[in-house]
Image (cartoon, rainbow, N blue to C red):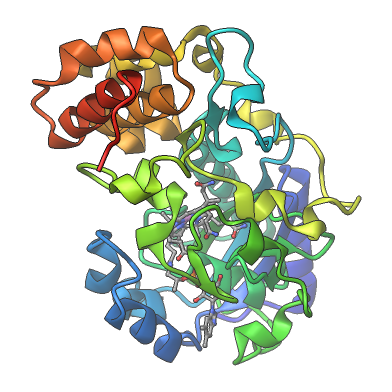
Length: 363
Ligand code: B12
């Protein structure tokens, strides 16, 4: 079934009423990114994210998995606002004992829940508009679709050199969600070359701001060097060459977005979506408290947070390395207990933390 433009207009209006900062509709024509994705994977730029090559075919053509789907409704949820990372890690916001940077995306309720709940509500509203049941599935982040490309095709924004989707009115502080539906949507066909949508012109602010040179060329991120990847997705020790660059980043990195001039234009929401709320647990924990978390404590505290993705071992490892960067004696005290931790990444970080506290060179 194909719906008319007026009906789609009503569905998109319902999406905006539900609080999406932007929403749009896309076809499920196969991706134009087949060569770029194949090249990116072949060069190993996905690092240890084995799920990316495994699901590449579905990412390029979601109908390989959801064969009943005919169109995609795409929504963006703002997570703008909150303290920014400043140049000197020791000056980071947070107050005494809690100087550490947590990426903006992880400061509220788990965005997967927030975005999917809103997509489901949108599906209900779409059913009401259509007057018939709608087969649908709500996707955010964890499913095998190229969400940024679908968002471009839905008219929500364009791709920056930092690979992020920048909204039509500025701001890349946007989560993306996709509702696959079993109706065909009246959309104008997408551009085949995603990069032609870019409005970066000769700006290189994000490439220059990346502390590790992870943006190896415009629009190409090498996850092996990306602090966001290393602190969230990567299991095991973080290679020594990145320890200092980590600065005070306990989880994630926003450098390439902080540097983007499009995040300083007025227009898009300047505050996080109210649905995200705040995660008070972050204010209560010092770096040493984080380093001392056990599995049960970690699960309990981060149950409803995107931080859970880093797992206890990842977050403790990061806290030890950041503690060493900030010369925090309370973290060094915890490190002594962690040199025999079951996790190799934690053990290596504890050794590095103690060696740096003792003023030794770390390989
Ligand atoms: C794997 C992944 C990561 C990896 C790799 C990121 C990357 N750039 O590839 C890591 C762990 C590093 C990561 C980090 C972050 N991520 Co992430 N991530 C994903 C995930 C699960 C898959 C992305 C993917 O397929 N990557 C493969 C590359 C090839 O695809 P791509 O980035 O979509 O493609 C770009 C390039 O290929 C380029 N491109 C297009 N055409 C062409 C052609 C040529 C010739 C070339 C060279 C390039 C090129 O433009 C594409 C669109 O940006 C998506 C969710 C999803 N299912 O899509 C979220 C997602 C992309 N991440 C998201 C977020 C919020 C983040 C972080 C901000 C979190 C943080 N602060 O730590 C950082 C941002 C870092 C950055 N600059 O990208 C959001 C992005 C929202 C937005 N506004 O863009 C998404 C959409 C999740 C969501 N539902 O909101 N992420």
